[in-house]
Amino acid sequence: MFDKLTERLSRAVDTLRGRGRISEDNVAETLREVRMALLEADVALPVVKSFIEKVKVQALGAEVAASLTPGQTFIGILHRELVALLGERGGELALNAQPPVTVLLAGLQGAGKTTTAAKLARWLQETRKRKVLLVSTDVRRPAAILQLERLAGQIEAGFFKAEASQSPVAIAQAALEQARRGLYDVLIVDTAGRLHVDAELMQEMRDIDAAVSPHQRLFVVDAMSGQDALNAARAFSSALELGGIILTKADGDARGGAALSVREVTGKPILFLGTGEKTAALEAFDPERMASRILGMGDVVALVQDVQRHMDVGEAEKLARKVAKGKGFDFIDLRSQLEQVRKLGGMGALVDKLPAQLSGRAVNTAQADRDVRRQIAIIDSMTVRERRFPDVIDGSRRRRIAAGAGVQVQDVNRLLKQFLDMQRMMKQLKGGKLGRMLAGFKGGLPPGLGGR
Image (cartoon, rainbow, N blue to C red):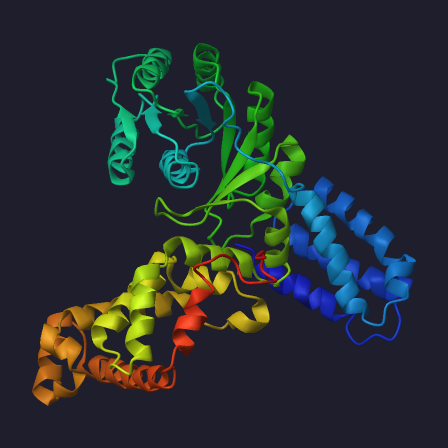
């Protein structure tokens, strides 16, 4: 989401690198670049003015003037102020109430509320071990009700099915009663979307709010919607007593200024980021780590947490024992590793969390993800014997495998070469080296990344 902003801020800070001293002139030059970067990212003008003034006061102070590395010190100042802009750490979804805890989702049409409802339900089930019931009150769009029902089935959450002839208020009340009878911990109410701030629909939302008295009212906003998001945030904030914000489509390539403005405009914390279409693509918001990502410093903590959450530790240990004993690395093992990459959200999700200098911004992550899918298709086209004993794959087998996977023979040849390179690398990890390397992900975060 912040690729362009990160690039512009990096160029701005580069103007201070190598300077022997900091002067008012070169700070002013750098701040002009920072200001333009934020405005181009669609950050609200009042927010930009306040941010620049705070950075300027610190940058012209003794802290930077006395520094031997002014560029690094300036990044430190930017980081602190970005954290303050995004909201201090501590915003959490309040669940300490008599169940069922009711969560109301509100926002404009197209912001991704329905998908977010399912993502939030999955997050509550997996991280908080809560029993969740989902309901949609969007009687104007029966497809939205059907979509949420299907998503609830995918994540094995409860779903209250209503008829489109019922009123939204009646649906919400009936769902709350079902949540009580079914001993659910949380009820998530997905409200009707709005193309703009519509008075009739806003009143409907207030009526639902009055009928079920939600414990949490969350504003769902598209991170790519720019200034429209701010206007909607003001309207919803005045209509409801919002408890927090969920930013969706944070993996998009738009300017992302809403993320830096909406918290300031509403005064409410950003609680979650939606980072993809899958129901697992929701992460708790951390202002310090987001500020690091904006400044090109990456988010290695989130990457390690993703690995911990999605990596099959049993499979990893099995592979480690196999390699340690000197047994061959085969295509069954390779396919398992490729699937692990897909579970982590693909190459795009991995690269996005690495520091800019390590991730290689020139990497075409979309192409890399296509390559992973192609490689899995090629392996799936092999027989069990070919996967276990790759040496038997001759020319005629390569042609058959290529035809079965719908690829060229060159693609099969390329995968075989890459496989041989990996096989040689695995042979160098005999004697338990791989096991020790993987063990770090089992017992918690490594030291320096939040571990003990």
